Image (cartoon, rainbow, N blue to C red; front, side):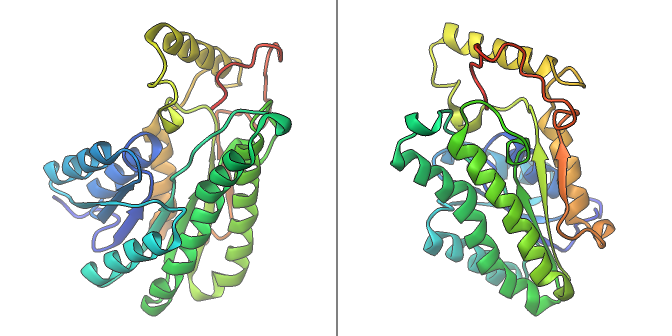
Length: 274
């Protein structure tokens, strides 16, 4: 494989068995990074992502990891740093959703969403930063959401977790910018993924209806369509690269204009939100 912009660097991409995480891991692999692919539940998908990177001539290892478990996340980070001698990039992408209003959201569901979506990135940064400091710098990319910036019907736990992740990103950027540890967040809008495999678990007719409704909602936004995962990966690659050396604490919507004009149409027919 020819040299890429991440040649010689080690990257961890959490939640990279499918969707945005998979696209980021694949792009990093093509650009020369040694990639640690992770997943908690979708082990087969994570192994397939790593195998695909290797098939293209890249270097990748799959490690099963629940990012809401601090001991497991620390073990993953320490392993990557020890095996490659460095840790340059951490992408906190792993996330889950729960589409309910406050009074409908169970305490267990709320805690679980925040455990993965907010505590997970906290653990990852906490354990990655010492390795990055020793080598003189690094990049942490948090995958937040437009729902951390603007409101949306019935996504209580998810929106709370992503709003918290945005502020965590800003705070860490303040604390670590002088150490050349760059911490930024991307905020996707409608992306053609199936968060948590919810639609995949539906009966075929219901799945088709949910997908169609999601596409209808995306069509109401300024760009008029959903994004493809590769469009998210391009931004992540830039933030991981040395080209983004002056990017610290940036919260970047990549949403087809949804945060400029979020159009929900008829609020009584929200349907599949994530």
